[in-house]
Length: 125
Image 1 (spheres, helix red, strand yellow):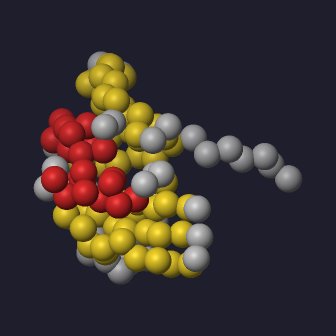
Image 2 (cartoon, rainbow, N blue to C red; image 1 turned 180 degrees about the vertical axis):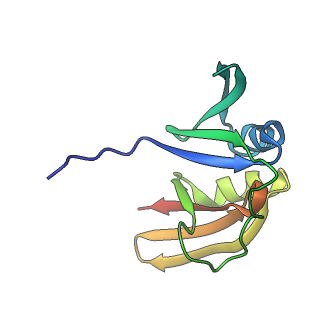
């Protein structure tokens, strides 16, 4: 069996700079700018994960509206969900699901990122 290890997420954006700025401001992303094949590239480190932003061209379809088939969301865990929620709300982040007790050991909520990206914030106890 092939031994797979998670590596990264690619986001396609009509405005990579604005997308990067949102992740930096709202979620504390570390922005890494470079050149690739003579074109500017924006990478981010968010919660220990690599997220790469690429420019969407005119042929790219609009962001889907949930629910839809394919990748639904990605999630980040925190310690102290209530404090994280208060901080995100103070920054103007839109919540699509308020904190909810999913099981005795897990609470979750969802926020909307740029281009309608659904992001789960969760706390495991």
